[in-house]
Length: 85
Image (cartoon, rainbow, N blue to C red):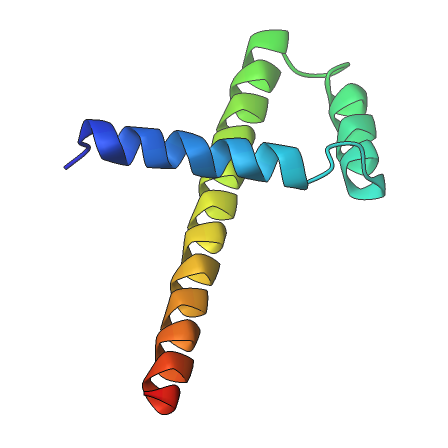
């Protein structure tokens, strides 16, 4: 379920990713260049839909990766604490 706390947590994760991941990279410039090239041949609405779907997918993958990394970090800390105790 998406409780208010879940929504706040997801927003915090997305905000953290936005702050930490640079947007203007060589990889992005390549994507941008290719999008500009294909925009000459396809309707702009289709290109916008494709771009939005790609962004949504990438955001979700980044969020999942971040949460997975945080989960692994917590498990590692719990293991270290258990060894000390």
